[in-house]
Structure formats: structure tokens, C-alpha cells
Figure 1: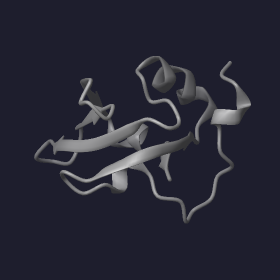
Figure 2: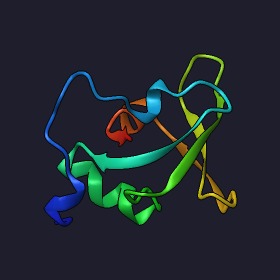
Figure 3: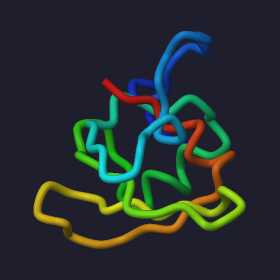
Figure 4: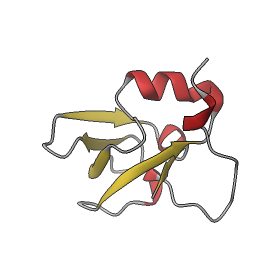
Amino acid sequence: MPNRSVLAPATPARRSVKDLKLGESATICCLEDPEMALKLLEMGCIPGTQVRLNSRAPLGCPITLVVGEQGDYTLSLRVSEAATILLK
């Protein structure tokens, strides 16, 4: 079970990775879903990490993110998974 400090209380007004526009960057604040949090943490979606929306599939899912300030790697996620990654 991930550390509770990376999990956020559900608030409808928070912005998530799924809300990013193509090419837009943001910093991860916290993870909303406790069940998905461990998987996302293992994939490098750690609070404080910068992400940039790289592409969207023609029907909107999946999306690809460039993770890390130096463009360390590209990560492909479902939109439902991206919605659980909250931004600062």
C-alpha cells in the first residue's frame, strides 16, 4: 500500500493529467486513487515530477506523457488512469 501522503482527497475542481492540452507541461501534485497509486508510482508518476502531454490517440485514448524535466521517458496511459494523477 502506498504512503498516504501521496494520495489526495477527492475534490471535483482539481486539474488532472487528462486535462492537459497537447504539448502542455505540469507538475504532479498527488495521486487520487489508492488502488491505482502503486502502479502509477512504479511507472514514475511521483509527486513533484514534471510531465508533458505528448500525444493522444485519434479517439482520445490512450495518451502518451513525457515524464521528467529532461524527457527521461515516454509513458502511455489510459485516460481513466490519467484522471487519477492530480496536478499543481
